[in-house]
Length: 423
Ligand code: AMP
Ligand code: GLY
Image 1 (cartoon, rainbow, N blue to C red):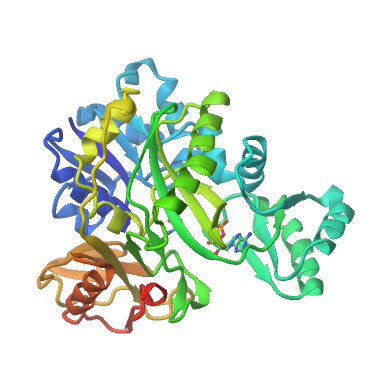
Image 2: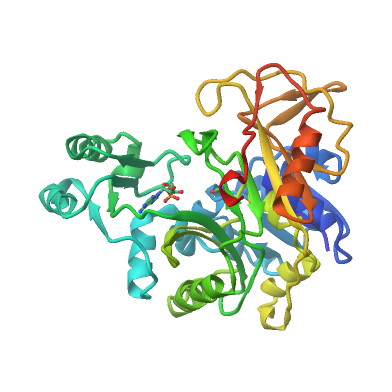
């Protein structure tokens, strides 16, 4: 098979790296890719939302399978686009239809879905300009802090958690008045859930599913989980509290009803279901759905996947997942993100990265880098994901931190405490 992966981050680098090990794969193309994917695959300078150009590329390169990395093209309907073209009826696509992608693209849609299929999640109310009084009443029934979520995609910035009631009301008004543009014309107000988060990943063919290794990501910029939210500063897998008892609850109360819901709603869903969960006193609740893999979770999940990844994805496309058994490595995996100084606020780009040749026992996944002749320069907030395996998550983390010692660029930053809460 020839595959085309859409995207340009650490996640896509990890997907390309894993598929490179598959017996089913001939050529791997990545659009637009990055210098990391350029080392193992063929980069094509095509944007992830340029559907016509992607279609040309698919034809030109005899692509058998399209794997959509980020959520944007899915929410914009890339799967429906190809499904509406008879010429592409044989193209296998990993990524749900536009309707199903609303599970990530609209918080209100996701909450309604969860309520309908009795999937545990925080109590909520969807505020709009014309029901402000009811929204205020609902807020009054909650204890602080108040969770306000822009309904639509807001580049990871659309969730506000606010201690003070009056401030929360002002922010609610700001959001409904366009603080996040159209994305906040509706705002989901939620009860705050106090617990520890983790990410669970399923691959589904729309009726069956297999689970990939679970992971925990570290979203805050600062040590001890302080400061602003980022795309993710590191991740580990396995997650110690995802023991058999908790896992069984997650499968019975969340994963199975979710897949049942997708099938019942007749959603065209072949791809990843990323369930953001929170463990509240031993009970799992859904914080959010994503219709793609996580970043940086993929950079640990795929290190721990023993089964041929392409076989899993191919079985999903052939609606044959019930015959697939997924095996994980016994080893643990960790990834530490190296970021540009200043990120997630303003930061500088174009810093030369030194030490990329000495990755020891780790795998370096590129996230925000670019080439300038022989040099590799920084080109984003998140720059490199340094991933390692080890006999437990702390050995894996030690290995990543050892590797990072060899890497440097001006104003480089990373968290020194990934996994700190799991000791
Ligand atoms: P989301 O985009 O829905 O994943 O929200 C972003 C982050 O906000 C989550 O990863 C949580 O850390 C936090 N969060 C969202 N909803 C809640 C909630 N109901 N209770 C507590 N924290 C939340
Ligand atoms: N790491 C969280 C995400 O990919 O959304």
